[in-house]
Picture 1 (tube, rainbow, N blue to C red):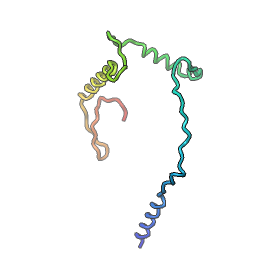
Picture 2 (tube, one colour):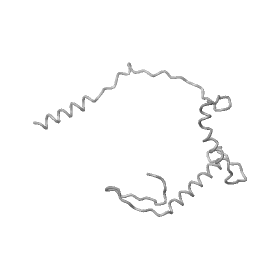
Picture 3 (cartoon, rainbow, N blue to C red):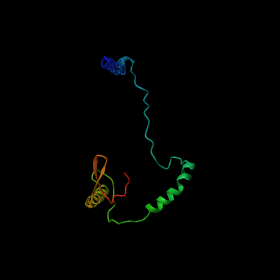
Picture 4 (tube, helix red, strand yellow):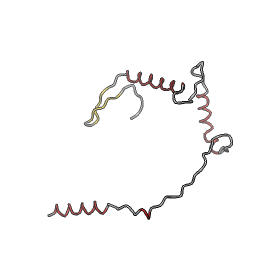
Length: 125
């Protein structure tokens, strides 16, 4: 008898959570505003407070990013689907993945599951 009442209670709780869809006549679309894209260029005004906040970080980043790390005889562009800059980045990624895959992995247990971990990987998991 208790099981019947429990089953009835669960069924009522499940059915009371169901909701029928409203009729299409009561549905409406919200107001849609079409705006022109804003071009990011020199015409936009700088927020002085924001500029002051990021100034020390910008100086450090500019110093690091301004260093010459390599040289190429051709311009690296990102134009088109198969650009030379995209190919260069893909090659670097592929080479880095190959080196990472050559490093030995170790096994460890966590509860009932067994995982493989690269001991040379410094990232926190």
